[in-house]
Amino acid sequence: MIALSKMRPSVFTILFRSVFKTPQQKFNMDVSDVAHFSTMKRMQLKSNPILYYDEISPPVRFVLMTIHVLDLKIDFKKIHLFQNQQISNDYIKINPLHTVPTLVDGELNITDSHAICTYLANAYASDSTLYPQNPKDRAKVDMLLYFNSSIFFPRESAIFQSPFHKNKPTYSSMLEKFMESLKFLDVFCGESKWLAGDQVTLADLCCIATYSTSELLVINQKGMFPNVENWAARCKALPTYQAANVPGLQKLKEVILTHGNLDHIDINRDIIIDSLKK
Image (cartoon, rainbow, N blue to C red; front, side):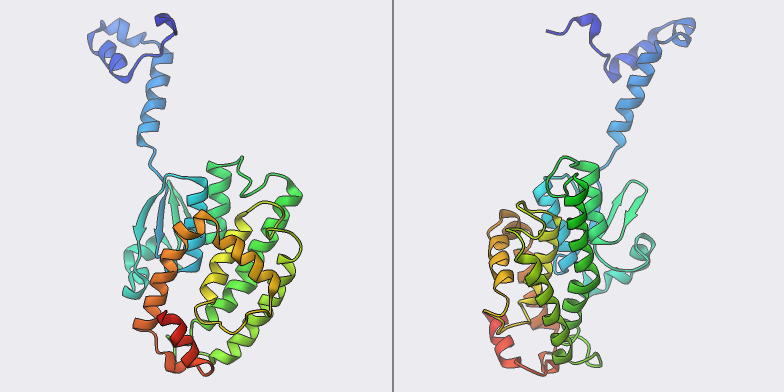
């Protein structure tokens, strides 16, 4: 049991003392009480980070899976991409790139999913194996995050321009470049059980968000990249994949069928449409 003399005073006790003490007593108020009161007030004022999101976005789903694994307390604000809320004046003040996701933590705004997830791991779960502390292990995770950021996701994203933008490069021309990125991924997947070693890391969550999205429009690839297929199957068995990635994938499928013009897809159109309707 804690001795009463050693117990820290509550906020109410501190305020009570300040009201009923003499002026001199108020002036001499215990400095430790003041410090304790200030700390408690800061804790009360500290708010959860805010994530601006639309789950149809693969980078958003990467962040959602990270939040799920780390079990973080985050406040969510939906930005409906197909209602153009990302180009509203209020949102552009937060993120001038008018993209999602955006994380706001106090005065800090982060507008890239890879930076968001590494920040969350560092700031709120520094002991998590999701973003390892060992410099060599972390370097491999970083390398794969950069691979997704610079090659894998941009090429996947280019494929999805076809149903929504008539004057963009053709689906078939973008598909060729994306298939090359799958060859790279197949090499990475063949080196260990998970992309960066024997444990799930941010690299896996990042790349499975991109890969699973590509499966909506990239078909007839079974057997071409066996290492990717095996790795993807393991990822899809993770609880976080089902909880934080699948719902957004389903919504994206609906968006493609509702808002997309699949006539712009110049090869495998009928097969892709049939797959989307399943």
